[in-house]
Amino acid sequence: NIAAELAPLLGESIPTAWARLRDAVNLRHRHPILWQATLAGVVPTWQARSVAQACAELGVDADLVSTRPPPRSAAAAGA
Image 1 (cartoon, helix red, strand yellow):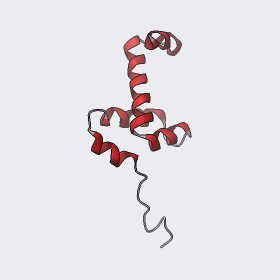
Image 2 (cartoon, one colour):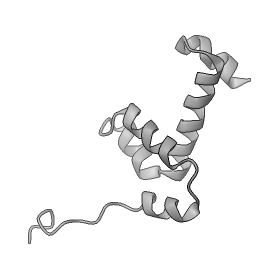
Image 3 (cartoon, rainbow, N blue to C red):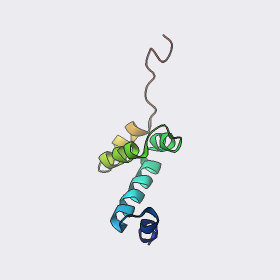
């Protein structure tokens, strides 16, 4: 299985490798904006994983909130 192959490459246990895989898939599919920010180096990996773990048990309605870009503030809009 993939976790058994990944674990020695990361120097981690198989359950830890599974957790990393689960978080990566969660981020990629349920939190695409956060995923892109993580890939771009804007958000540290540990923070993105924390969000994925915190939201893992939430339903689809929560995904709709987390996949929308944040609203622009009046200051950011130049008002």
